[in-house]
Amino acid sequence: MERYCRDSISQWSKRMKTDTEVDPITLAVLAGRMEQIADEMDATLFRAAFNPIIAEAHDASHGLYHATTGDTLVQGKSGLPIFVGVMALGVKAVIDKAEADGDLQDGDIYIFNDAHIGGTHLSDMRLVRPYFYQGELFCYLASVGHWHDVGGAVPGNYNPAATDVFQEALVLPPVKLATAGRINQDIIDILLRNTRLPQSAQGDLNGQLSALDLGVSRMDELLDVYGSGTVKTALNALGDRAEALMRAELSALPDGRYSATDYLDNDGIEDEPLDIKVALEINSDELIIDFEGSAPQCAGPVNISLPTTIATAYVALKHLFPNLPANAGVMRPVKVRVPEKSLLSAEFPAPTGGYTETILRMIDAIFCAAAQASPELAVANAYGTINALSIAGKRSDGRPWVMFSFYGGGHGACCDGDGLNHGNAPISTATIPPMEILESAYPVMFKQWALRPDSDGAGEYRGGMGAVYEIEVLEENGAEAFLFGERGKFAPGGIAGGQEAAMNVFSYENNGEWKHPPMVSKMRGIKLKQGESVKLETPGGGGYGNTARRSAQRIARDVARGLVTGQRADALYGNAWRREKS
Image (cartoon, rainbow, N blue to C red; front, side, top):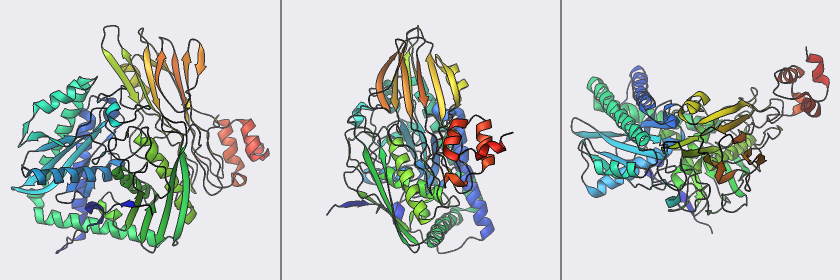
């Protein structure tokens, strides 16, 4: 019988007991104050970072974590939700190291990016700082941000052909960046020597350090007013309330087992699809999320670590139940089952650079399973790929440049209406970097940045529209492009009778001809001359409900706006909509 890894790690299962209570008004005030601290830490990094992926796209997060378990206590509203659970396990790794070393001090700061030790992928650099109040450890503060480049074979680190982590980037386990407030410059020197963009890395690091400093200052102010005992009690109460809310949501759903399967195009090495299977088992106020039958660990970089899988389950639940707070109490009634040595519990040194694509597919599958329990609960599949595209080269003076960005697409429809056109991936609250910022920073020009007509999944409510991006290289030395995408073979699905959306299409110019990658959605080493372009045509979102129920007024409006062509509208809905056209 296949053995399973369970989320038996303490931060998902231990309950924090309270001996006293905090009155509701004080509890609400403290919850808001602590959330504001995390929000301010987010804002500090966003304003200080040199890297557009942090400064503009907000690919970062900050939070407060339990002093002994690493449980997520509070996270900012601007940070990426996927970092909540993953960071908790990263903090626990630091706690374990500090206990083993026996030398934890006020002012210590740990740094690491190891994706197999509470990480996502190697581009996400994590800083963890113990917070002491009046000489006693109270909690941990943590900062994570997506650095622009951390070495490896591919600029920007999304290497679609990597077969181990060493081909992706520098691997840094948890080490002390600072001891009792004294920075270890040797660690910084190693990091800066292993990046193509040392100025960017230095700026991002300084921003994260500043965010942690601000967190310490704000926590001092809070505890000076309310005392450590009251704040601890409030944190315990907030965790208990999160658990109660989760149990109430589960109790409202019908008991049963609901299953779904989705697929990744390939792993970038072998052109074979990879299964993502999930079953949701609801029993009263408890839930099991079971990934039995998912593909085994693969050669290419679409593997993810167990902490990332658990965090993704949390993110999916947060989408399904948006009123849930961002702390570990949410996961107490939930068990996550993951097959050992699978794609979803990959072991070191399996490559994990494309983790974003896998977790998006997990969320899609969970939504489809949840829709069987309650169609009103879920939304149809979103476009399902960040289309991580790096374009890199050297300027005429020899300086290297690396433009890494992710791109948008359509979101799924739901029972309340059409999906969002050209949104960002539903794993985050990040934004798509504006083309004006990218054009000003790099020698490129966007020839197209537009909605993609007819890319939606049809239904009573249609999915959102994907986008078309065409990017021309302006640098006289040319450039090299690297793509790590998905949804080139398996379209975003609809729910409750809704239809599939259009699939992902990538093309590039080569000597006057437009070509496509052999593996459809992944390719490295695309040589581009000055004046040549790459083009992304991103997927739309899946539809909701039967197309026969879509109103003629909505159809006519979509055609008038150029979102849906008249020919496609006729094929999908018949000619009745034309009477509404005016």
